[in-house]
Length: 222
Image (tube, rainbow, N blue to C red; front, side, top):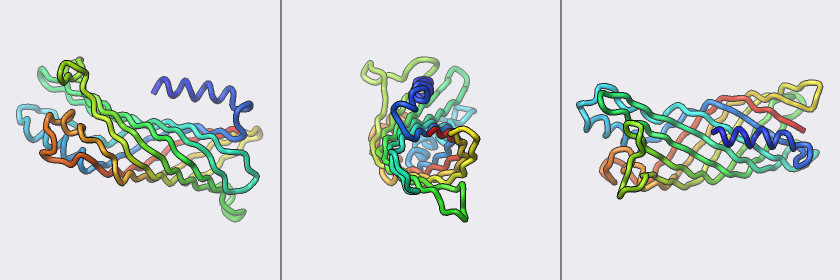
């Protein structure tokens, strides 16, 4: 997250040189994944000795940057890069279990400014490839498999629809509060259950569909 925020700051400084329109956003991101929920619920059920259950992957954060190609039309096209992070942490006696889940999306954005009677409202559709990686930490140490730091990678596709409102200032800067809905129909991640529950194909599939919801704020530069 720190590296991405640093990148956003650097790009904002040089945006007048490299871009006609540049967008940066931060948001809260809700996630629902049926298969990963099953894996975590199985972990909790199979360990009755734990008093604090492992939370599901639900609440996360997102940061993104977009470059929109020069256009005088209401319909614009661009490139979007985003990063999302989720953390599941449970502290029990002699056992602190932390799951760190990261997503990186690279996609094609279609931005539409609504007509005069809906001035200020815009919609944006982003079609992207998505990749994920899951790490597990036990009592302050990485979870090891075959004496190596265990991790589970995932790859899939993502659709995201954003609706927002432009709040303009005297300068070329614009603030854009927004809400968004996203859907990943297929994310292939065969080792996720093994990282979470140390089982494989016992309670969940080697892929999952994911639903997302976001609320956040964008900062737009021309």
